[in-house]
Amino acid sequence: MTELPPLGRDDVAHVAQLARLALGEVELETFTNQLARVVEHARDVAALDVEGVPPTAHPLPVRNVLRADDPRPGLDRAEVLAAAPVAEEGRFKVPRIVGEAP
Amino acid sequence: MTATPFESALAVADAVRRGERTARSVVEAALEAVAKRDPELHAFLHVAADEARAAADAVDDALRVGRDPGPLAGVPVALKDNLCTRGIPTTCASRILAGWRPPYDATVVVRLRDAGAIVVGKTNLDEFAMGSSTENSCVGPTRHPMDPTRVPGGSSGGSAAAVGAGLVPLALGSDTGGSVRQPAALCGTVGMKPTYGLVSRYGLVAFASSLDQIGPFARSVADAALLLEVIAGHDPLDSTSLDRPVPPVSRSLDAGVEGVRVGLVDELVGDAAPDVARRVREAAEALTKAGAVVEEVAVPEMRLGLSAYYLIAPAEASSNLARYDGVRYGLRVDAPDVAAMNVATRTAGFGPEVKRRIMLGTYALSAGYYDAYYGKAQRVRTLIVQAFDRAYERFDVLLGATAPSTAFAVGERTADPLTMYMSDVCTIPSNLAGHPAMSVPFGAGDDGLPVGVQVLAPALGEVRMFQVAAALERAAKARWG
Image (cartoon, chains in turn orange, cyan):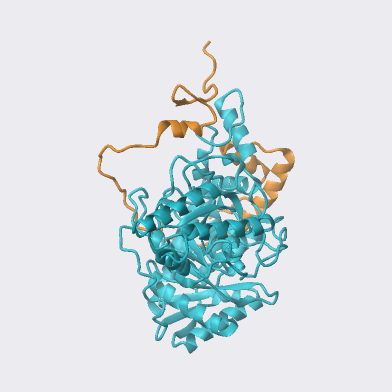
């Protein structure tokens, strides 16, 4: 197996962007140092030979569970929308999603 | 533990059901205790005084017309603030959910009410249950009930401190990597993580869905058993909920441990500080004296648990916490378009530990690293399950420390996340395997603060586990009173 590269500043900047987090310069530095230590520690796992060992994603042998398709009340719409940052005409309202029409 | 207006949850419920004490007077005593102690402890994020009084009056009314309010009649309960309570703030100690009032109750909350229990408030936690000291709360730490310079443990530190200080006889927490058991150990209470799927997760704000379980805090093993029996059981609203009878844990508490095979786990003793390790060995001796067959056993795979957990849990968290986008609930920080609004909201709303875990999880799942980190961690999880299976061929339960040390000082471990993560080393393996485990107070460390001994059992082994826990409790009582 090829050697895993250590976690660096660019990796942290990249995952922050994927996770929709903005980091300042100082934060980027601090997080990089802290996360690099955790990833370094995780190498005892990454270095193990687990060829042929099946992965466990879940402690139970989970199967998909479907309920009977009977109508039943959902959450109260007004109560749900009351918790929204912005709602309008019975809907969640968000800022512009795509660019202005040309 | 400190003085309390409540002998036990069992005694309170019994007195209320017999009409010797009103639920209202019990709740007033709890609210008074909270008002007196909590300014110093900071165990509560929200006290639901009006709702609690109304619920207590309803219990008293039911009794007056001859209806039994249930096994927890009038018993005050505190809830970790990641359990949804309809109309009552549920914040996860995060700025991103400040002031959020859920439109529904968690299943455990419904079951508590149906059993006659009274929810008195919501307790402090590490933000989104990510931490081991309750210092990651956006509104500041909870203090240890016996020493305000120490942490109560975490992440369910508010619930542990509230029960440890005797403000309430019972509380609920959630345990993803030890977040019930570790603070229970540090605060000198009983704390238990059920078999995965035994208690519904519906309405528990998700952190790492394949690991999260809700569990009880109590001042005795019998009270913890009672609370578990109330909250456990199949729930169609949680697709991972087990459709099986609830283990009758209360029934065998007095059965003793004659012939029970106990494995004292080398790794769960060796990784603990000398004063904690000594108590664990004494607990093993106490079980031997009570008739159990105790043998030492090595389970070296447990040492891989910490690394595997800190890849798996953040990976699941990074996905679960994607829902905090400023659209449907909680904080929104305005920006000209939706993507910028998401970034501004999440950047302002999440604290540093949550950001660390989201980024760590995103990294472990990202292209090029998925197989090396997340994929490997999942296979290591299998190795840990297999190691447990081998151990349980020889033993009925396993024994070890719950936490490597007694309560540490506020601020001691905040600078280095990895040092903080080590606090969970003894509790994580049970979460990875989906097994039950519980912490029972057993004496004190060199600093006079409580030590917790951990009893681990295979999936759905709760009856045997509680039986052993009850024996340890009797031994502790005989020795220290």
